[in-house]
View 1 (cartoon, rainbow, N blue to C red):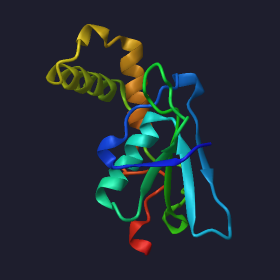
View 2 (tube, one colour):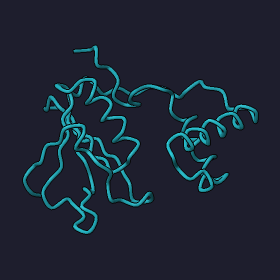
View 3 (cartoon, rainbow, N blue to C red):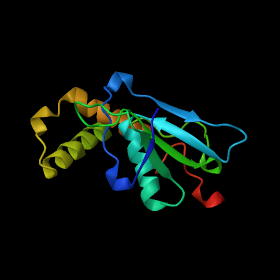
View 4 (cartoon, helix red, strand yellow):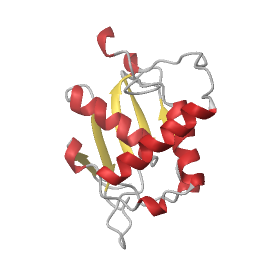
Length: 153
């Protein structure tokens, strides 16, 4: 690999991985104090960036020289390092499936959000809306699905 390059929250960008090749891995050695989450998934990156903003001393992000797409200038993977006490696992969500009316309301919220951000709402196809709704149903609102025990220090 090359030399480690550390990033502030604002320096972390997108990755150059296509949707089908994105992955996230947790590297955890029992003898080490910290774990490393390596990811090219924008959703995981966003969640970990939120944790970095909120707890800058607890979370570090880096990548390696040579781990960059020369054409786009984007890194392939980011590595987030933090205390293994901050990792937790939990059971399945008890959230109920959305009704058709809730799905329509969610679709309208996405259209409104896109319009407010100046995005082309014509690109917001039914398939895209359904994908976004499914992601919203999976996301339970926690800042991070796996990393959430900040007060255990």
